[in-house]
Image (tube, rainbow, N blue to C red):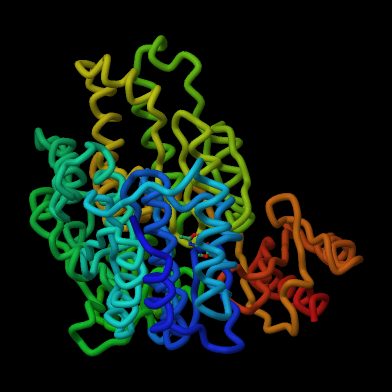
Length: 541
Ligand code: 16G
Ligand code: ZN
């Protein structure tokens, strides 16, 4: 049985900085790394508490994803490999904001344990309940890892650090650790065994052709954002070689480049520029960028005279949707009876992508607020839920029912193929490594170049702006962030401005990860999208 006195004493080594008020936002806690020791320690307590209460292994990922190298963050992972339920976020925030050690113990005892357990909490001592921990490549990782370990151990729960792993790898490992009770913890290799194993099985038989014509069709240049993806992606090189793809890694961190600085999926998607260390890549080459913790992926191709042709998360979603629809059409009708397919997007999805989905693919669509937890939940409600944010984060979820039906018909080649896809595609969270394998497989199977893929539809020109305002919480939204509720009158003003633009669409939302307000605008031509964004920004100021 754990002892709250031990918690109190351990907590005294991790005092909260005065005037620091973290909140569990879109992707967990995020801040300047120097402020985060107490927050990460307390997340260690929380992850251990949830392990005890749920009698399962839980997880903690220490990362600030695509944010600058001096930031860091922490995110909780639930036993199913998904994110901590939103209902628990307020308690996490309350715990992180306790001003002293007594308050930490009080929140833990009265808010975390008491309402959720009947009677006293189960003892973890002597049991094998474990919090699985991973971190990215940030220099602040070792000290924050020590804080996390101290938090977990203060509740007499085991902690296991996987070291430097991608966020999706950690989610995958937590999920698989909970599959067989009392089994030893999974090794990182099991992730590659499942994902790469499915890929090799899918590509067996050698019917795959080189991805279209062109002198560089065998080359895939990957921008690793100088992050954790570099080491893990290195392990894919042989698998892709078997498909005739030569994968070259850039921004691996070994060339002295800084994490996420002028590179990575966020930079490429938002700034539409060639990442650093890639100036020598031939025009028209197949390239992709992952972010600092390798849960986002976008593809692109360098253009003549600079700039890039971007294939963002919307395009990835459409490629996956087109392919999966093709395979599903080969399935016997009875297998598909009552099977719901759905594509989930956010307000950031390009209007042309939504139109393609609805008018050409004729797939049902749902729009949710920004943040994986919302998209993931919506995709889970379907039997086959395809979700990708434009920024490149997403995955394809298969329901248990659908997987069971596919298994029952495994002899059918299309059923077998979909089953393998459900293993190739990380089912816990968006995953750049699994995404690269999926895209490379589909391009080969369809014999498409990036240009063929790009031609699915033409994006409407768009512009995003980031505004520093005095109080971002004064802006509140509804209807999946497409409508501003407060300040009063702001939405009417935005709607009036939009009405002056052909194919105009715009919205404003407070960021969930930064102290800023974001503006998105799209219109028929780039100058108009820029102008619309500027006019909307003026309304906000
Ligand atoms: C985080 C979210 C991402 C979202 C982004 C929005 C996760 C794992 N990541 O990176 O889904 O698109 O925040 O950031 O949930 P913003 O609120 O600052 O625009
Ligand atoms: Zn990320």
